[in-house]
Length: 120
Image: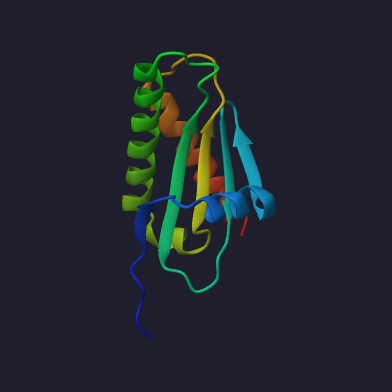
């Protein structure tokens, strides 16, 4: 049996995002929330990141947090490619009220994704 290579893609499309929030499950750790949904026979991992505009007024701050989140997800994907075939639609939402450093975000993302993929 040939192994399917999983790819990372940005989450796009109103219908897919609406379905994700209506039918998806969620997990959270400290200041991060992930809403996930499994689609059968799909080898592309769609993910999105979101930061509240109400909490972070400056776009510079929101973009910095989103860049950090994307980088941590990319690093986790690089180490654990086969896990991503399980849940292929995820939205990561940053719920903190201040910017935390890269190592703390990385640890939180890794713990959250480990918890998500180990629970299945």
